[in-house]
Image (cartoon, rainbow, N blue to C red; front, side, top):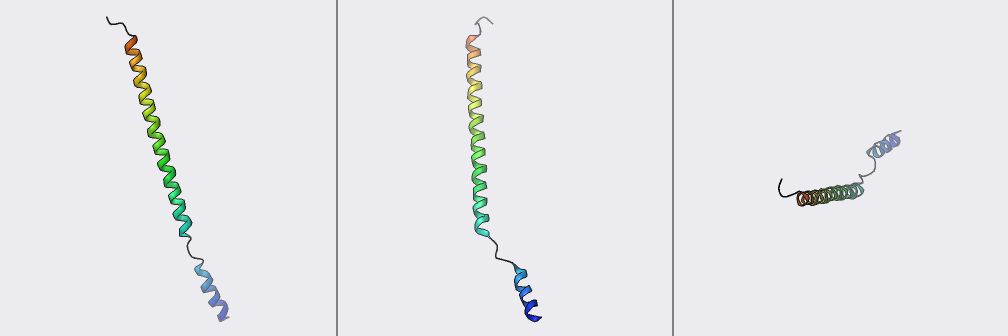
Length: 66
């Protein structure tokens, strides 16, 4: 009986925490977030350039007397 209770106490602790995989997962998620933010910035810059280009075309096409 004592050996069973001793075994249960030891087994109740469970295995050591798997911090290596958690660290790798966190690193991966951080890379993913950074990549998404970078893509969002690039998209915004492309859109801004396109809007400026279209505004310039509109400005160039307007008659001078208006």
